[in-house]
Length: 177
Image (cartoon, rainbow, N blue to C red; front, side, top):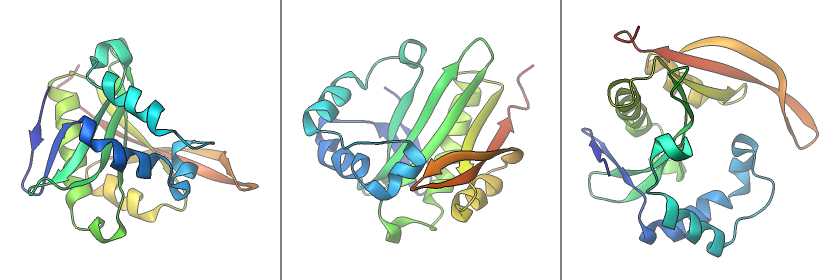
């Protein structure tokens, strides 16, 4: 499995020891608006997920990696999802769990590392991300990382009785035809 290392973070494969972190993250109801989660995950289900996390992106169409600081502390997760080798595109999502670990450039570096991986190892033409209208931090992160807001999906996400717009951010691989 790959490991991607930057100046602030390391992206590594998920390990069985990540179960407690994954359980906290997946069951944090503050994140459900973004993830689309509607019910809690059990440790059993997440353990099974971790047992299969090694599967190839060409088979399962996704890749989830741990975002760690250089000391090895697990900070968050970054995902490539809906990998489409025919149309040469893949979605990107990330979360840094603890508020005190955000806005320090680690998310931006993680996005840069995984985008480079998608362009160079997977040879995709584009990487895209969906960002809710009220997520200013994510908009800044993707814009800082060279992504461009190309579309607005009006009233796309319904959460707690209200509808929100969702923006589409895209970054194109300059070396891919």
